[in-house]
Image (spheres, rainbow, N blue to C red):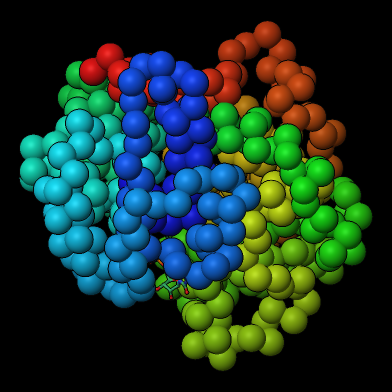
Length: 367
Ligand code: UD1
């Protein structure tokens, strides 16, 4: 099941193994369903092309709407798909409305649900993602956790059966697809950016975009940073819409605003940035994987390891905190990328070894 941008990356990592030598040997096959939650060319199709994701067998084309509208459209469409296909297991990823709808539709039809990225918690029920993940976890027969912290979160909620700590499929993707970025992406030249001399920012969370006070603080913070360091902002359609509705287009004037980027262009910018400023979960981790300091525009994170290891700072939405966190992050010596092992220094990497997808496929085959 896929539907939104982060799911394309996670599904690419799993599909590659599931449809590859290992999956075939284990007798597995995949039927790919796209809900159509993300539908813009640069939010969807470009990821399928770059990550060589097979064409979806079905695209429900649900498009935009309120949470209830889109989730309801997905539930209706998925019930039909699931009734016809009789899958052995429904594999859902992450915490979007697509995850919630697929888990619920499958569970009601008595189809086993397997959740990739199970057990993450922000402990903030105001976030739609928190509701989606809690529900998906409690409906799942197989729970693939990326970290020990995720396993502990599930244990606290009484979920212990079917739990597997497999590592993070996003780390698999970062290693495999990230290696393709230098040859395939020319985004630095296109945007005339020098490595190490710009900040990369992303803002799209509902808690930030739908709260004018927080959005105001974030834009003020980014503008302060831009006085010293160019700030590149690939603008999510949700954020673009809000900024325009508030009549704040001028507030973006000192930022290098670009359209949403493809995966390989994003990876290239992440690796070359002096600092990454984001409210995205996936981007926080990619910063960590590539050894780039991160400032997170939230008050909590599900990826607690990045903060504990000093690679990520929580700055909320206040301009002064954002600027100070960016200053502190830029003043630090660069630790170097995880993939070269320099940050690991003997301890186990918190996000696995780049083979999470293999473990998932093996557990699926054995279940
Ligand atoms: C969704 C996920 C979020 C994830 C994010 C990644 C939920 C609840 N949230 O948020 O966890 O981090 O995807 O991007 O599922 N839009 C377009 N074109 C598109 C897609 C969206 O214009 O291709 C606009 C629409 O105006 C839409 C709005 O963005 O109403 C929000 O899209 P939606 O899918 O509801 O949530 P995201 O903010 O993208």
